[in-house]
Image (cartoon, rainbow, N blue to C red):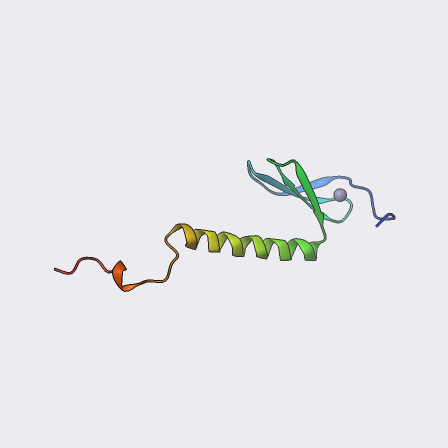
Length: 80
Ligand SMILES: [Zn+2]
């Protein structure tokens, strides 16, 4: 990695208040997390895997927050 290209011009791929993702002149994807100030430099392949993992966690968290437990009998509405 010592001979890798230097970081250069960044092309913005996506941004939000929480994070900014750019394609860097060094050939990696830079994932900057605003709150922690951490920047991860990932290859395209690593970024794809991280993205899929984050998306999976996001889906799981949404399910969890929306009462993601399996439907049980006591979830039935009152029967008149
Ligand atoms: Zn770079």
